[in-house]
Length: 488
Ligand code: ADP
Image 1 (cartoon, rainbow, N blue to C red):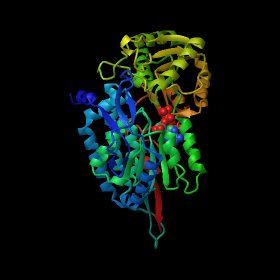
Image 2 (image 1 turned 60 degrees about the vertical axis):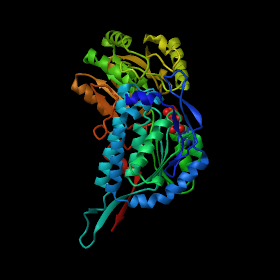
Image 3 (image 1 turned 90 degrees about the vertical axis):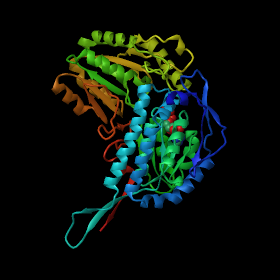
Image 4 (image 1 turned 30 degrees about the vertical axis):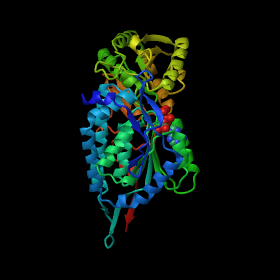
């Protein structure tokens, strides 16, 4: 009920600088992807001036925050986690309506954010609570300690508008940095609510500012400034390059960029795999969250002998997918994020309809004709070369291979230059090991689906074109946000 009540409200978001939102309820209209173009709220985008003011304040606050004992910083993060839990229905409602998340996805979204907060709180206490003595020659003592770098800029995407947003911010804060948070243009409202909860939990005003708005406007205002000590970014590889160049070209300290970008994720299925299990895992990997996960399956390599049978089973399962209103519990596949995303997918599907063989396209109900829905589809393609870039949506590509070509398949996957996730389905242990040893990916999944990364258990992040590391939700993530000092 709390969720439904929230769904009926009119929402507003804007910059939060100095702990206070502006009390003018104006700004551009925010559309929910499933709401048939109906406005769900408004957002006042931050200006370059807002960004500079936030940076001035954060820069002044940085020493006090870094000198706050790690246990106190951790306590604040845990209070934020408690507030997220208390406000779960509200936060879920934003995820459903602003980002088009299905209800199971919205639950996972809030849970993951909570997990990040508690995990990084624990890591801050473990690693930032004071100097560690290093073994050394007698007569001399040596110790090492970790400190915040200063002001971190955290730039997040719309596909995990609470989880990734919170993960970046929590890590930077836990490590002793002040933070300027830039949510995606499409999802400012959930970020606004999150920052309100963070300040309510006792986070000092100037330690965290929210700068919703246009990426280049905020980027151009902040990236050239030498007071930006580091950037955490999740989004496209192209934008990561732009940010990297801006940091490289400026005067001032050499700042780290922690980037988590796209993938061209593959699954290899050999003829020993269990077809029912593969079908289930393919459906989850390719179509859950309408395929809008950086980890999602894009290219399925199937050994020739079982390809006909497996594609038939996949088509059968796709027929059962329920597309529609994400606020209904029965919905499997909600909308894609916006018109632009839908147009890109439609363009890709047109090319595939012309050049590839359609395996199946799930029929869309009439109720989906007006929102930004996109029908899940699967195509057979001759090779990976057909795909020019990441296709971010519910589109699966299937390639057949012969057993003798397995190493060529592995080379082709590595040859994309991306290295985020990959999966293998096989009951032959030697084959599994052979593949897992050779795939250059950050996260490999064996005989299971390839989405989902449990904080602290399955640290997540890619290599190559997919990101810089370290892995989010992993034991060393906070270290990249920190600087090490040795006293001898
Ligand atoms: P996506 O394809 O997921 O929309 P983007 O890389 O365009 O990926 O966006 C991810 C985030 O990066 C968003 O918050 C966006 O506003 C931000 N962004 C885009 N361009 C820039 C830029 N030039 N400088 C800083 N941030 C940017």
